Length: 248
Ligand code: NDP
Image (cartoon, rainbow, N blue to C red; front, side, top):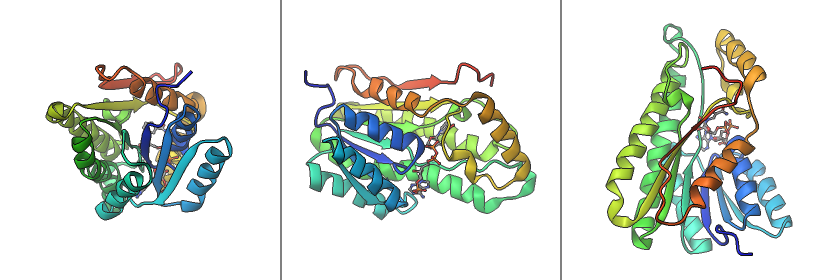
């Protein structure tokens, strides 16, 4: 039987690990053609090789989402290789928790540049192509942190609230082009995300919390599949989910 996703072209930023990697593997197994963008090319090439070994189609494009030209290049390469873009998954992200009084201002800048501006650059890069197609689906990755502010999570939460605001604005603006938009807000998922925290106190709190609650990245891949496999006239706008064990 033909899968709903057969031949869909899906661009995934942050495709070298965690949620992006799990989603690439899951959607490729459903017949989608995958274009991965992130900085670690070797990691993405290994994922591409695995997908191809299973008979799938995939491409890796080294991309730093803080550079809008590189994000445009990612989308352009997808179109050159596969002719269109059906789904843009703006997933690349960074979480560096610390109290504001620690003044880790470079980390604030990084989170704003990757989580907010990277998402906007993804939208800017793909919109003209989707407008031309009169179809497409933009999925932006927020978080439970985009619904609840926590101490030491202030700037990360601010970026994830921003992703939700941007996504809702986008949803309202693209009706004329027949585009779908989805925000996915996961709780604690077992990935490399907490490994970038440099503040010892915040790192310990997060690692303890993740050890007690975090679930597999496959949960996210299934949420993406659910959103994009709906009939074309169904627009799943927001998915918020947590590990069953997560209290916050
Ligand atoms: P990972 O750290 O495993 O993955 C992050 C991904 O983002 C990597 O592929 C990384 O690739 C990429 N990335 C980071 N900076 C850049 C950059 N400048 N340019 C391009 N790619 C970049 O964590 P997750 O998979 O968990 O994170 C994915 C998304 O999910 C993030 O937006 C995160 O905020 C969100 N999220 C995660 C949750 C969790 O508990 N894990 C919960 C809620 C939301 P590379 O380093 O190769 O560039």
